Image 1: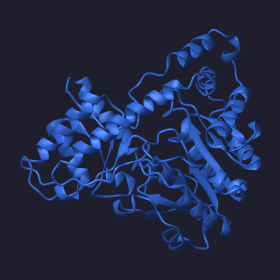
Image 2: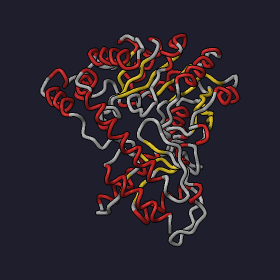
Image 3: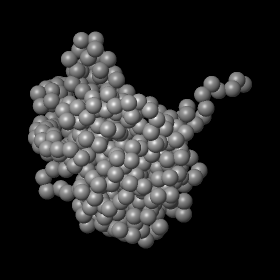
Length: 399
């Protein structure tokens, strides 16, 4: 029997479904197809000009042509600490901040730092596709806790308690949520935080969609609501969504000093510092004019209301109105099992393939998020494309 060319640990990793859908859609676009891509969670706006200009200036400064501290430029760590107390009321210092290559590296590193083999993580589902993979790479065990459209895609204390075991070490919380757009009200989030504190759990809270909340919904940070949790809480964040900077690759984690120091040691061997030009751009984003944040949020809110209205008229589709992020997560269960253009999709995986093949619309099937029967559509794309895409879906599902 031959030796496997790929290690079992790495061979078990699934390709990111969201990036796979995005790549397939972009390949079709490159071939001349008029694809409407609801796949990737990526703002369609350019990075604001003052941020780009800061990067241009940084390119010309020889200081940025050299290695810098693995944990991040001191100025950026200070800026993150200042931004955190400004925006969410959570007072931290720069020593509690680690600058990472995007939010994904922060997610990977925090699980690698906290988990030993067999440790369990409570993961509210539907969940972002990267969480289970990062947990598994750290030797941990994901324990999905399924929320449904009936609960607004929010889990309850009772559900979490039913899933807790002697091996439970970490609770993962994400509000606003990717993929559902759910936002936890203050009382529900506080109750969950007090429950986690009572049972001595660590909490990882992903706050990257902090500024993308709409209507009456409000963002709340768990360690602010339950201060006694702070010594067992790690916040994951970044500039990608708020400032249309997905390609710049700047995220961060905020946590207790010992956790941040350990994660910094890991990063010092994995990637060293984040690209200095990107870090300088992030400083400009966090400390400069914040007007672009509000204008992008207004555009996303308009698109949110448009897509909810349009999808509400599509046969076989049901959805809860999202309150945050830039995603809708409708159920397509009513559209499955019907023969459309000679094909009979019985899963949202098959339906997503049908939509891309027949009407050139890319969506991400719910299977990727632990929720078969649903699909994620990102409305971070132009208004005209959004209307065109949903119109194509409605036309196909009405045949």
